Image (cartoon, rainbow, N blue to C red; front, side, top):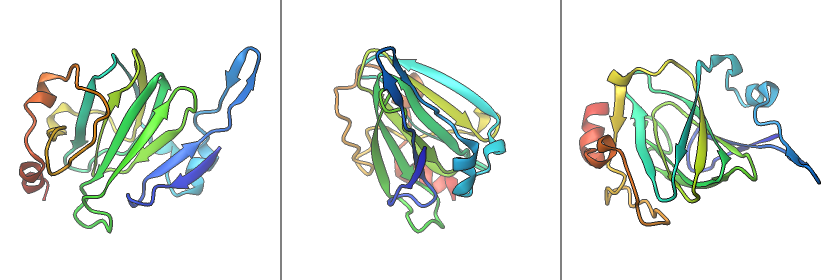
Length: 182
């Protein structure tokens, strides 16, 4: 497994495993504490693992946490997603930068999303399973959502949107959210 810095988001990393394939399929290490620690991330700092399953076209996001924020390690374990990270840390040298990734069950690449960054994805397959490893227990009172279709973000979602949650549909614009985060 190797760690690759994400140039557009300070502190974000891609973790690229080395799958071992044969006639049976493949085996892949999806987390390696030594590799994670080698880039300054505390591997023991993760508190919860979660899994979402989405049908093709679903958008989940754009989400982040208020307060101390929430760092997460995100991986598409089955299917494929178009993954988005937006840096919303005012003191970051990459503030308001956006990066896009294709995450898939075939590659098992993970993206580390630093606390203070918004995250979301669109399922490109039916289904798409996304695993999240987060650094602190989930607290719904700290949920922050930004409109996934905000023109200021201009995210080029690759498919027509099939479904979103009520929370995502009613989310405020980025400009409104930035006022509350500062």
